[in-house]
Image (cartoon, rainbow, N blue to C red):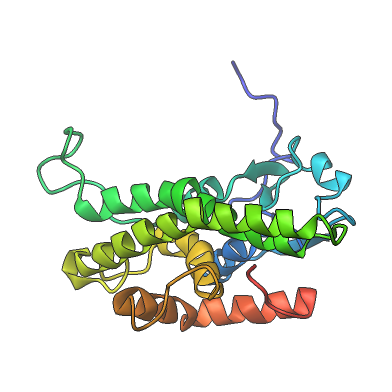
Length: 260
């Protein structure tokens, strides 16, 4: 089928796409902001405020049917889900943030992928599917304890919160943090990143739950003494110039930088 586009409607090849980051306050959108700064591509930010119930405003549903944040639009086309956004942006603007996929001579072969690439794909999904799910479990007991309630109900709420913490959160951190410590110890080329010697999109993806875990001393045991490699890794992520610029931008947008 022939295209109906005319030369007048085609975008010049040299014209960059229009990227808009739809920013909801107190959300995980800072990972996408960090990536955009790391990519050094032009972008705009459209801000949205949560309502009194901490829910996203209806205006976000005009961008994506689920009203999700983070969401980006590229020339008006919405892209949601952090892992998908990061993979899409890296593929188009910074392939350097995606490890080489195939071992030499094993292109297209099952099992022919490099260790670096396998780790990249795994941690892109692990960050939200496993690690962030556990982080949410760690946050719920704290929210329950601070939720407004009649004084005679509060002991019951506190007991439920303590039971959740003991049954789900403590075992979760006891499993995930040693796992990540070992993954850093066995990283290709000796690390210092999860996928090897270079920063990848997976490191940006996992930054939020890891840095949030470090900020929960009442829940997480992520300390320099307990997990020295993991602690140094979080410091390495924070030392990135593009990460620091993203933090400055968050402070400009929200007045402060708070992960949880």
